[in-house]
Amino acid sequence: MKSKLFHTLVLSGAFFLFVVLCSALFLLDRFEPVIAEDIIKNLPYSGVSHDVTAVLLNFRALDTLMEVGVIFLALMAIYTVKPHFRYKPLSFENTITNTFVALLFPLIVLCSFYILYGGSYQSGGAFAAAALLAGGIIVLRLVKPRYLSDLQELSLRFVYVSGLLFFILVGIWTLLSGSFLEYRGDIATFFIISIESVLTLSLAVILATYFINAVQRFK
Amino acid sequence: MSIFIIAGVAIFIFGLVGVILQKGFIHKLVSLNIFTSGIFLIFISTTVHHEKADPLATALVLTGLVVTLGATAFALMLIRAYYKKRNQSENCNDD
Image: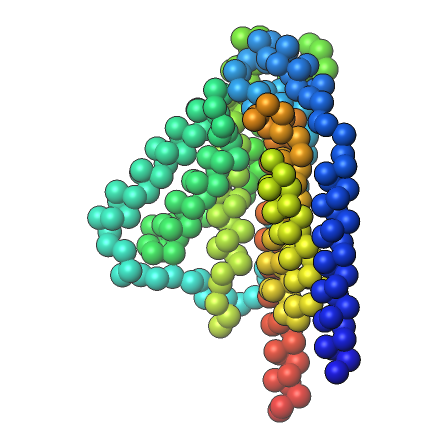
């Protein structure tokens, strides 16, 4: 009886909140894209022709650095919880044939390269490419675990940190001739493409590690 | 764009109700993800100008998505550790 009352109370509160939020959002002033105009004006100096990529990796590159830092922090946190499990890796061998995986994985890698490079002039970029590549690695890990069983933990750790370290190195390099992560013109294109490439590989491995650690079976 | 705002608020409310009413931790985590999606939808749809999303808002939502992903992965590991610990203690009581 008590829980039924609680349910009714929560649901009516939710409906009230829905009405209040909707009316509040409709009463907002019209959105004026003040910063967007600035971004469009400075786009030629950013080194890329897509506005979101320019914001992410040039104008607000420090935010993206912190974002990669958060991803890495989550990985470290997962590594501290991981020793509590004695696990058996999840695998579905014989669900997909060798030939199909041999065709599928290169196709995924190719698509992720396209999305990575396409990020400079259309929607895409390092994070989307990394998510796709991580999906490819997860498929490979689930259906053919023996392909990845030779990987050493130590070399994997180098890949985990490579994205963040490379980003910080670029920041220090730009610090020598200006301020942290400030680049413009031709050199900006080179910096953005190189940062995105390293980030894609590193983030893909980190995201795949998230999944692989989360889906283990208990012994 | 008003339909997207209403949909965003609805998704947000559904997620919030799920976080409050669901008993299991995995259910709570999925509800949390649903309500962040609602917030992102509201954020994008309120900053649309001339049929085009604001680049700064899009970048912010991308950042938010990535942070949500990291938080979800860590929460999943913590939930598994919790259930494992609980099962262990129940087994000890049986013996």
